[in-house]
Image 1 (tube, rainbow over the protein chains, first blue to last red):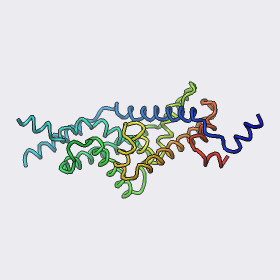
Image 2: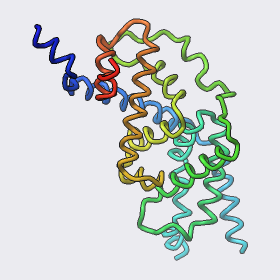
Image 3: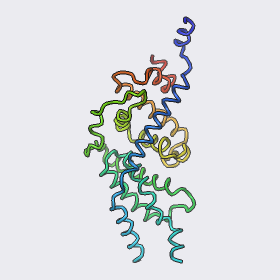
Image 4: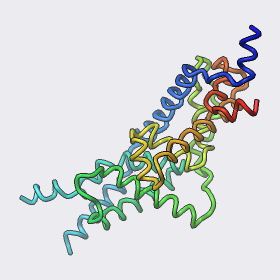
Length: 60
Length: 190
């Protein structure tokens, strides 16, 4: 017990397993943030824009 | 024969990258209207500069690079951040937090929004959209080591904010976890 306390005061090595677990949770949530944005439907204006650009290129 | 030519033209592949480009833009701007303007600028720039794209390299990485450069240069010009006027994430704080021992996604979203765009960028590139540290380094225009340390700092910031957001402690020992993620500086400060 005393030894453990002393060890902690000196800066115990990080609990790797917990750190890994937390990092995994963060990455899981990050993917969710990104996937939520990915699921949104792309507005037609971008397909229209590409068609417009293609038309311009064709005319030149 | 014209079909063959257009199949080789990377401009014809732009459409396939629209959802990813828009998702990246949304995570950077946190604002749909600003994200759409950014995607529009990116498409026009990509189209007109397609001769600068090296065929055979990663088109998505090239497009993401144009998008993030446009975003950060516009931002430098404006020198102020758009503060979610559409309220994409407003209301999320009001939702009940999950008590399943996991980081609540609503809390996470709010914390993510409060990160700097630089931190959001690095976390999305390496944490969510599957780019390697080396690829992200090339896209951001910094050394790989900088990407790693920036990603670590961004994760630390998230941990700090989430710890503050948790009235009670659903993880059980988030203080220790934060310290663990923060590394030696956190231990010294304690």
